[in-house]
Figure 1 (tube, rainbow, N blue to C red):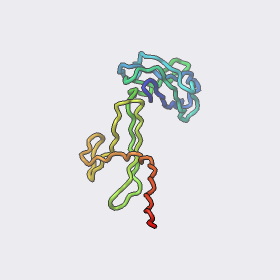
Figure 2 (figure 1 turned 180 degrees about the vertical axis):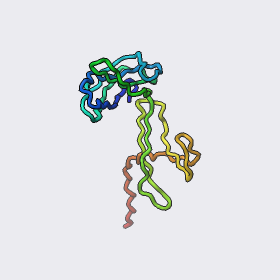
Figure 3 (figure 1 turned 45 degrees about the vertical axis):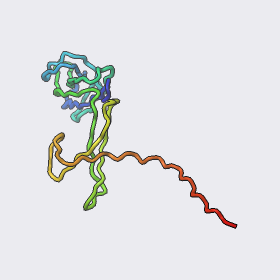
Figure 4 (figure 1 turned 60 degrees about the vertical axis):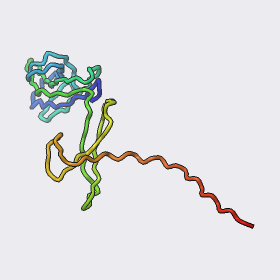
Length: 169
């Protein structure tokens, strides 16, 4: 996801119906219930499905408005005009993506914390911290201690040689 684009993914299982002829994503900025999307339709790739196993579908949207919530639904239509809907999901463009990784190098008194941050070109991201606690907590509700991510090491500076002692004659 970026400030103006998103990759959409889903799956369709034709369940043996050889007539699944159109698979599309419908998206819009207004919330809607399953089967009631009135927004733009974009062809999924692949655009058809057959067999009895799920087919992975996808498409890429561009030209979206920054900092806007979009609602999306995958739709599969057979040659008889019967439409099956995949359910409504939402995403917001330009949001900061954060993922907490696993701790490594764990000892009795220390651990190395890992995570990723994709600021999606948001200049307001000025600090990144881990929060850790000895008690369980839900996302966004840590009452423990913050740990700032380490700064990269400063570049080495050349050291001037020490002056030589003078010799007396």
